[in-house]
Image 1: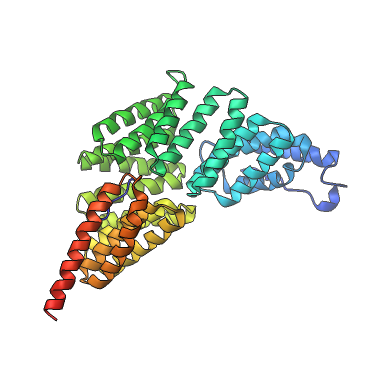
Image 2: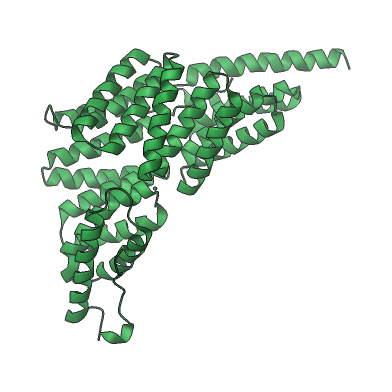
Length: 419
C-alpha cells in the first residue's frame, strides 16, 4: 500500500484623514503614530494567545503607516516582533509576510541587524509553513548570517534548529543532524531551546522507524518545553511523543495524547498544529482499522491546510485519504485523492512522495482491474525512480513498484487469455 505519512474592549485608534496633517512625515503625524504604536504594543503584550481581530486589523493599519516613518522605528520594530509569533499562531501567511518583508527593509535602512535577523527568521518560518522551502532557506540564511555577525549564539541556535526542521521536512536527514549538532554547540546545557533540537532528532527517528529512540528524544524535548512553560511547545511535544508511541503499536495511548493535544491547540487558536494533530489522529485510527473515523479527521485537516496554504501536508493528507478510500473500495474517490496528491507533490518538487502517491494510484487501478492504465503509470514511475535514490522511501518504492508491475502484467495476461 502507499505509505501513510507522518506527519489561529477598547476604543480603536484610527488613522487620521489625509487632510489633517501636511505630510505623512510631519512631526504631528509622527507623534500620532508613536502613540498608536505604544497603545497597540501594550494590548498585544497583554494578550496571552490570539490577538483580537479588531486589534489585529488596527495593528496592521498602524504598521502600514509606521513602516514609512523613520523616527517611529523603535516602536514599529517592537510591535512587529511582538505580533510575529501571534500572527503565525493565528494562521496568517501571505498578507502578514508583506509586513515582515517591509520590516526587513526598514531594519536595513536603520542598520538594525538584530531586528533584521529576527524578522528574517520569522519570514523563514512563515515561508516554511507555506511549503516554500527554497524561500524559507534563503531567509533563514540571512537570519543566520546577521546573528553570526552580532555573535548572538542563542539566536544562531534558533535559526539552526529551524534549518534542521526544514531539512527534516525534505528528508535531508544528514543535513538536519548536522544543523542540530551545530545548534547544540551554541546552547547552554539547560537551555530550553535544546528541546527544539531533540524534536528534530526524534522526528528523524520516527521516520526511520527507530521508535524507542524516538520516544527518548521526544521525552527529552517535552521536558525542555515543560521547563520553559510554553504551552504550544508542550502540546507539540506531547503530539510528537504520541507519534513515537503510535510506531510501537500503543494505539490507545497515542489516541489519548492526540485528543488532549487537539483540545489544547483548539483552545489557543493554533490552526496549523491542530491540523497536524488531526492528520495524526487520522493515521492512528487508520492503523486501528477504524477507517471512517480516520477519514473524518483527514477531512478536518484538509479544511485547515487549504486555508493555511500548506501544500506539503495537504498532499500527505490526500495520500492518506486515498489509502483509506482504496481500502474501503471507494475506488473513484481514492483515485481522485491520489491524483490530487501527485499534483501537489510535483508542484513542490517532492519526487519521492510523488512516486509514493503514484504507487497508491497504481494500487487503486489494480483493485479496479484497470491493468493497462496501471502499466502506463508504472512505466512513468519506474522511469522516475532512479532520480529518488537519496530519499528515505527509495527501497520501499523500488520493491513496491516492481511488485505492482508484476501484478499488472499478470492481470493483463489473464484478461487476454480469457477475452
